[in-house]
Image 1 (cartoon, helix red, strand yellow):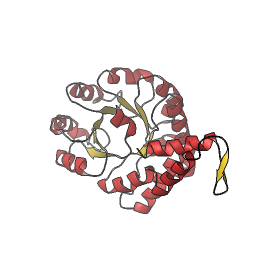
Image 2 (cartoon, rainbow, N blue to C red):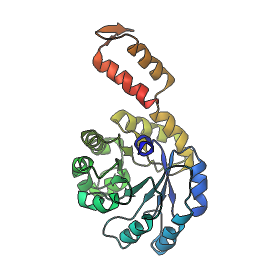
Image 3 (cartoon, helix red, strand yellow):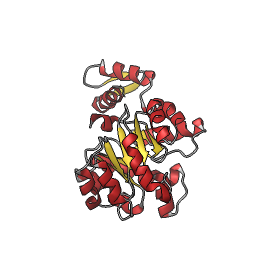
Length: 260
């Protein structure tokens, strides 16, 4: 579970492209998500499921299955009962009942990507059935009919961060940046997610890993600041004109914890 708790940059790879599995694991991403859902055409679902047998990777393996109620959900779950996966990602997670049978196979990453899912996020996080929440921002924007912008999605993102905290879960994973060849856009998305309290981001291309990891890990300057703060001991004091007290020290401890 410690690997799942601390993941920052897990990378999606289509399950019907097994030749990409090893390449994904060799990237800077810290986990591989083999996708049986959106990335796989309907007529390739069975072959994609069979290809999971080739997924012996050196990094944590997560499998995104098809949603509850689809024709492929039960076969997906059955296929994973004999595979050593770090977690199963459930798309369109909306109800505790949908997580229960999956949790018997492996830890569950609940992918919240509908209005109903956001409304149920606190209940899901508190249920003890989800190991971590993730945000499917593109599907969520479609579901509620909003633009896929930082401003339009801020409320949903904040709700997932709050739900995770209330449920004692690790900080959630933010959704993908579809523009995989635009590092500036990715860096902006990473900084926005980090500032809201997310702990990582879902990736769709190996080139996104470096920017994402660097964006979520504290900078050398932040680490140095945190150490200076903690070196002040306790009680109220100041550094560079800034008041230092226990809440500021708690922030400093969090920075050093994120830095490992």
